Image (cartoon, rainbow, N blue to C red; front, side):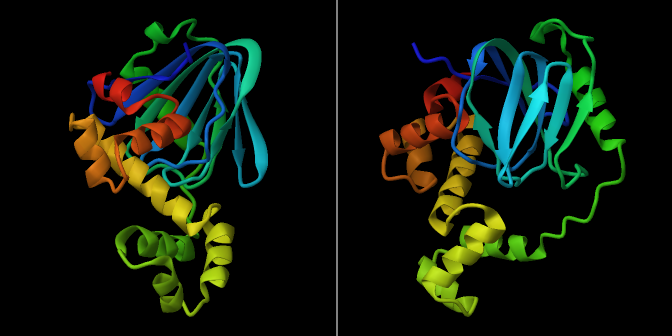
Length: 234
């Protein structure tokens, strides 16, 4: 049986949901981003991500904050037992750059970590300095155009004064993925919100713009490490 991330809703204001992993190594997943900021707390082993072309490692006893909208690709690790808790928190006042802090060995298991501890960790990360300027006005415009416009890519490209090929190069440079891939990731995040609200999977697939339920399931598993059905039940 393929190992998967276990998601659960958080019964606390300020935390959208939690996800846990316990087992040998960790999964490699497709590059993606979240609508929420993600706190990665590693209790044993390590997690690794590729962000902006660099490999970033979060060792045991450390927590990382990956800001909302930041493209990141979890890298597969093998062998060593890894225990990790992800907490997804509203973007709100979170910083605009990746931050990693040492939280020590205060916890031995995921069950020991309360929502209050998650809030404490978030505050520790953010206390390292005031949130910086996002500096992403151009990125925001591209993201908004690709997300909110129903027009074909070539027409969006023309609105930016670019050919389709030139626009694709600009999007890859600014957003890290091709225009079609960015739109697909946006639809996956929309599907995640609908599933979280308890909507039927087939309806979610249609509403989020996927060709069918199997299409959604395949991409969801490769991106988030679990299936829509398991995610919806948790």
